[in-house]
Length: 93
Image (cartoon, rainbow, N blue to C red; front, top):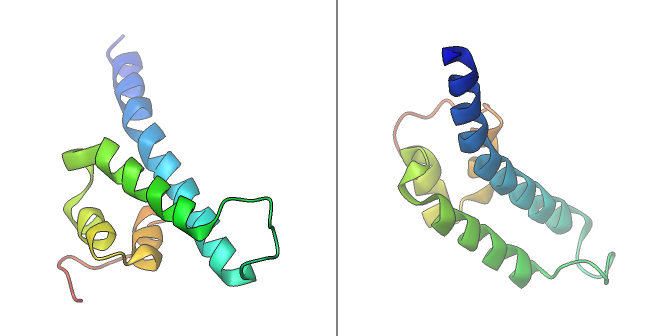
């Protein structure tokens, strides 16, 4: 029974971070392929607003380094952090 509770708590925590991961990935892909390729897709401004909204929803639940990256708009570093490729302990920007 305790394990089920732990899993439920973990799922609740992971869902918003996964939403952030998807938003960051989509924006980085948009930047990589360039504007105008998918004219029906969301604009860069829309994607930035979406990331800001998710960041506000998560608030202080975000790890400090991830908060730092998002506040400084270091989106590539934020994506690296979410994917476990960031070994930074303290801000270096």
